Image (cartoon, rainbow, N blue to C red):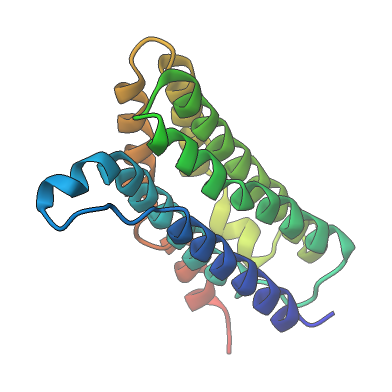
Length: 194
């Protein structure tokens, strides 16, 4: 299978996820700025989720630059990742509608954690297909940044039951870590002979 088809499918799913998220936001009744206050939590959770989807889309593009051939394990790994990303509109909306309450915030963190786990599965499938000396394998290395992200998600889930706002700090911190596309992959690709 051509990787372009996998990338196009993934782009389409991600575009639909963003569309669903924005359609979940209800237009306030009224014309004053005060009328926006009730939708502020939903908008805030939308912004965070939009940033996360953007991060995954951007890094997915970089990740697929390391792929030369696609097989079943890569396709299933990609679908596994997309499954968890497809839950973002639900968990994001639930968290925002309930003003970042404990259980919705914890479930949001669980979706983030599982998406990160899905990302690792996709990486491993690509590395297994292309070999331990492949571009991706050399770029990822021990993946400290990915492992730290998962630890922060887990901490955010745990702390959500005591202080849900602290979990939002953890989730936002991980997003800030990943705002810039994974430079490890860019550097590894630059070292490759053309």
